[in-house]
Length: 330
Ligand code: XIL
Image (tube, rainbow, N blue to C red; front, side, top):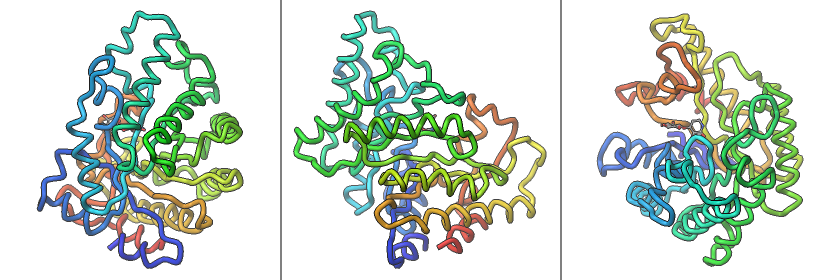
């Protein structure tokens, strides 16, 4: 089992899985696999702002509470994902007609209420997700427009204040983003943002999503990216790992060649992660359990042209070669 093998390492780390509340029924295949194999969970979408916040100061905690309680009851680490993300802004906040200062106050209230609600129950939060765009500029989101370029730092400080006020002084705060390893303009901007957050003593770690393919990024690119975070003394979360094999829709069924290439790439990622200094390790999280449920083919943003098989389990919950690759990387 993954979890067992990782826990035997000299410097273990959490092995995470993205899950949905509906999958947590006791005795279900997910439940059995989660408890055997994984030591951390992230909500795939049910802890995002558009799910929790139905109106100003009005919250729907049901699904998120179920996920957090499951982790707490089963000695599984809970990573909170994500407080602020441009793709999960509730309609009421998009339509908010107050002043910019009132908008910022709404965001502060949301962060404060959610961090307080889960204080002591959630080990870490992605405070801001994807604030940098692919050109290396601050992403032009409603948060940037309404709150200005310091909004990321403000959000981190509000999260910290809320945790401390609730008596949780060990909450880990992460900045999370994608595709930094092969895009140096984006990587540079993310690391300058991290410098600002470090200077403000507001951040503990960085999440590298790692929605990768069987070809890219290269091992050297990933290592260089993660080692920049090591040099800054940040904890590192490989936060949303999946490895596509059909980015260009050139295969109609999973081939043995791609199966082996994917296995090698999973192994490589685990080797890179495992080689990090103990102090920088946190968790390596896989973004979904079964291939047939992966977000990849359904993402309008990725505009993925066909089917794909990016995960560790097939549609029957059977382990794939990618799972063997993961084990071999340890
Ligand atoms: C995706 C989920 O997988 C989907 O189920 C949801 O509908 C949209 O979000 N980057 C992130 C994740 O940080 O939250 C996204 O997850 C994938 C891209």
